[in-house]
Length: 329
Length: 297
Image (cartoon, rainbow over all chains, first blue to last red; front, top):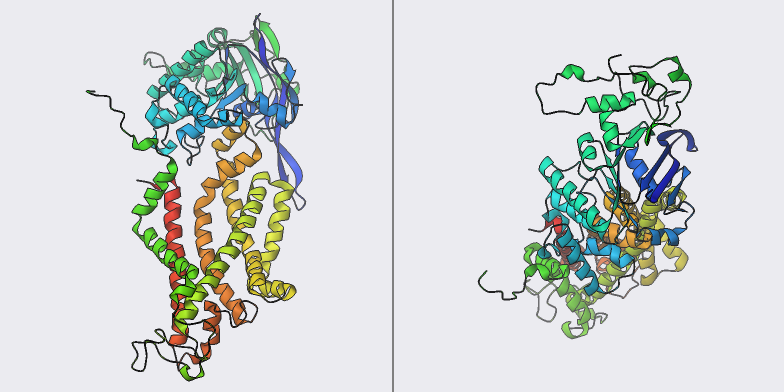
């Protein structure tokens, strides 16, 4: 049994909507609504879902970049939500994040050596010479060259910038890296480069990834386990192979059927086309939040919330009829 | 590669040198720098440069025209005012006062305004409300009235007038900085700085603030210009520089009755203000471009 590195329990993040004269809270966007997830040391957990389902918020919440409204996060067995500023700062050495947009995640006023060296400086490496040595090392690791050190972010291409972001995340030798749509902004050939880089780094430094993406095929390629998120909740969580071969939740099935396959022989009729839009996270539907769009919805779905249960080995689903229904209705 | 001679790579330089050379390549900025340098030098070396004593009156030399005028003499190159004081001398000494006023009052406003704006923009919440509402209150007064109130309370002197001007300028800086900080806070590099464990001080002043410099520098150079003018207004009302201190604004104010009879008395201090303001603005534009790596070629 591998060690559990991160254990997020029932994470809730609501963004209040204030209105009226006295700015009272009139409603809340339930961005993350009770998500539990464990990440083992050295594995890659994929987190997929359509835009607005709360996957980025969840990723930021486990790093405490957004303070969760409720829930508990255990990192290496310790609850980190009660940490004060100083303890949290020390912990940040072990958890890092790679951002989606390589154009806004690097400070345009700073040179590359400053950007990558800053984590080192913040964590007490005062000597400039030592920092520069380490920065050079990191640049080599991510495939950039020494002469890039004094350049500014705008002098790089998107892929190179993302590599700088990776180097920054690696600077402190973290254990966990949250890759928040780390490759979504890149074109396909660069995506492959960065993904392979991330995989190589994982082997080399025993990294653990939470890989957030909306791209199912990328997630399948990198992940050991995959969680599917819908409207602030995880609807299915299973080892990658099991999830892609035998998806049990109707939403996962619909998502997977929508993945474009470069094969003209496959008919589009096999696609499940979901009706309607994602409901508003301000006022999610009662019961199973997916029921208004679900092909198999029954009465019970709108009344009770399905339990998140283990149907097969390691395969968790929150659906009343998981495994009992098939696509051909 | 035939031989591996360690050649000095231009990219190994500290960014500061790039900024200097960038500024140097910008001809208008250099012009601004030259103008300001001239003013600063004449302010420093005023006693050696000026032909007369700035406060020496001479009843026989009242309202002498400048030298190129038919009746002008080399004794008073730019002529004299209604008390017979040499205008060139007073302009040179006036540079001391005016530059001091510009730098100190704008500097004071810059520091306070930036600090308040950063706090308001970064922390948001009640701190923002309190700070920005205070700024609104200051802005709600006509600023010259506010300056008069402050000077009246502290007593009329050059020093108090500078404080008054500084206070009336604080909201401009605070608002600009708050706006920029709010905008920058949304960007991922701020999250990244948080994620590496940087403290608020570092995030605000090392990560965010340099990105807000553009509008700030423009506002500062404009501020220099209007501070000189506002000081002139306060002096005009008798609340700023006290006579006989040579101050450009006060010189204009005092000679307004003479504009038809002896236009030079008013023209030269006006030109001095014009060039000082122009110099600051040109330099400010150049600085803004030089400090932003994205605008470099």
